[in-house]
Amino acid sequence: MSEHNPPPSRAQRGLAVLVGLFATWQLVFLPAANLVVFVPLRPAWPPLEPPVNAYQKKGTFTTFEPLQRTADRAGRALEFWGETSGQEQGWSLFAPGTPPYSVFVATEFQWVDDTSDTMLSQYEPRDYANPPFRTPLFYNRHFHFESQFVAAVWHAAPEAVAEHPEHWANLPDIVRASQNEIRAWLGWRLKEYLAANSHRDRSRAVILKHRYISTPKPGEHLDAPRAVAERPFARWWPDTDALDAFDVTTMRYVPVGAKP
Image (cartoon, rainbow, N blue to C red; front, side, top):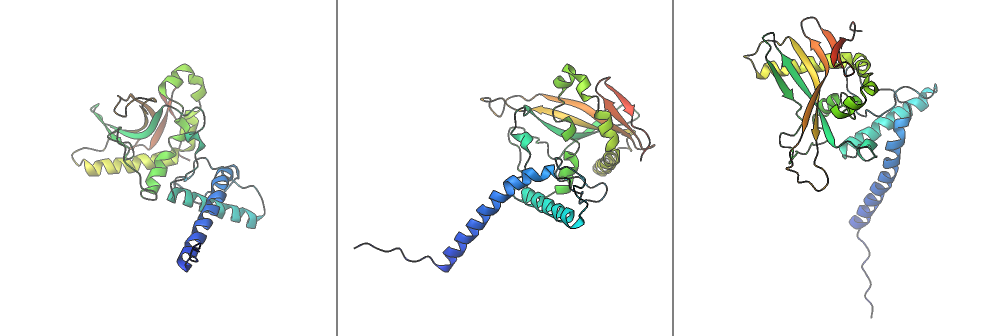
């Protein structure tokens, strides 16, 4: 005589429904999060707030305000879920041409006596073989503020610049377009540094630079030696509030003009 399975309990049925809804939402989220970056959306953040999605196209695609407003809200919802669940959709992580290194922002302080000191990003691992886990949503603003300074130079490793410097001639223009954010960032980093080093005077210049850190090749152990290369991106003069951009075609700083 065959045994019949008992009917599922209410809790089991409810759990099955939740699992089904979650799976359905994921099937919607994954393509939607990748497609929405092509739809012009208005920034949801006030001035000097970093973009959560550096790949998102900015602007408007319609003059019909209810439709644009709905798209803006949908885009923000997708960004929130991607960050919360650790599913930010950046295809540059997987597409061909992924560089064999990581890029981090660092801040260098220079004084009139020709001494200098560097403050590394809190996201750059101090132990490259055992990088820590970054908890989603914590220090979110800090993380995205740094990230916005990395996208433009992601593929501009020293060897790539040396081979075709003309391909990166627009970097000063990028500094010029982001000069308010760069000034704000470097000013905050200077305050942070002086608070932790009360014996130091206010520095003469503050430099935003990028650190290119090689990653192990396939088959190499995580403890394999890492090559670290640094290159300036922008230089800020606190006393005058002037800002310079580093031109990789001439390997010199160039002024970006007056503050807008």
